[in-house]
Length: 397
Ligand code: SDX
Image (cartoon, rainbow, N blue to C red; front, side, top):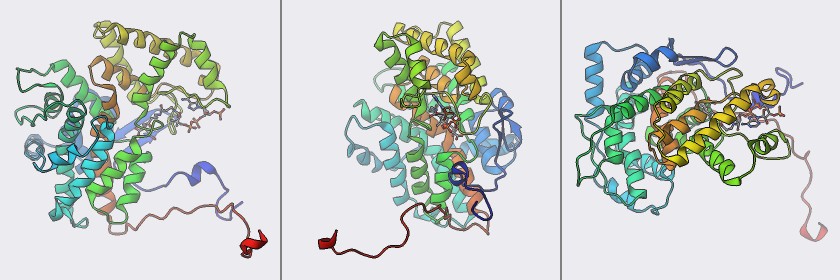
């Protein structure tokens, strides 16, 4: 007993706060942004409209949406000298490493956004970050492949512009596939916010010291990168590849996942909060199975990964170990497969997660900094070390 609460490792690892942005019920598998069910937003809304909703609390009318889209479109370019910043990275640097560096570096450009207590400055920073993330993400990939940077094209939609910067070549015409544009836009909506997950809590804690918003989002990107969090979508494909290349039956891996002594985990399964099916996974699973039906996965390698994924999904949904522990496939299990089918390079999967989550991070940061009562975060600990003892001279040790 610790006086006002009984020690619970789970409690000690979760910072709790109040927020009006996202409602999540892990037992019932419910997710709502500003009260709107994720199923309806994924079906009806666009990513930029969802960004407006998360940031401002209401769905925009036509004029408000047009103005918001214009503000994002006209901020998609980077300061030209930032290009040289990319050159400082090794060619084989993971694009998430580049993202952390370049987004953090934005804090050296926008001093006019410095006043974190000014709603106007905070919104300026929020629009800049939402606008520039696709450019930084695409350029991180282009740099890793030794390909020329492609500038944003403001006549394109947000998602189409990202795909244009990722895949077009200056030397030949390029048309964005409308199916890919639609799938990407929906995936960004699904990833936009998710209550107080590890990276959002990182953003809140980093921002609570009144740090610069660009540096704060760089901290969120760093936290998301881990395979237990946003890095899971990339780790899912690595796991499927490991299974296929091992030549061993899937049952061997299922047994390893059940063995407490074995660190092997089924990537893309389980969740800190959802003890029911992740509602995002349900939505994205439908898209995934539609893509299979439409034979989108032409690459035979990908088809084999897909077969393994579907076999894993079937086993996990029936096996007592997983069912009794509510280890359902999560959003990362299916997004990894869809990105594969879309031809997104593996090292960009988590970058796309960061692309979607930026608006959630910056909305939660804005909400916290807009609260006059907000203070610097200071989680406490339960001390389990040595009792007080006196110093011993080295010749007596
Ligand atoms: C995201 O927080 C968010 O909202 C995150 C996120 C977001 O949008 O921001 O939803 C995005 O991060 C989704 C999660 C992506 N990560 C993965 O897919 C990595 C694989 N999953 C695991 O690492 C794990 O499920 C966690 C980290 C996600 C959750 O771990 P917990 O909290 O330990 O899970 P739990 O308490 O429910 O575990 C119960 C049991 C334990 O075994 P026992 O002690 O009961 O014997 O299930 C086991 C766990 O060891 N378990 C797994 C497992 N996940 C949990 N066993 C095998 N494979 C797994 N994936």
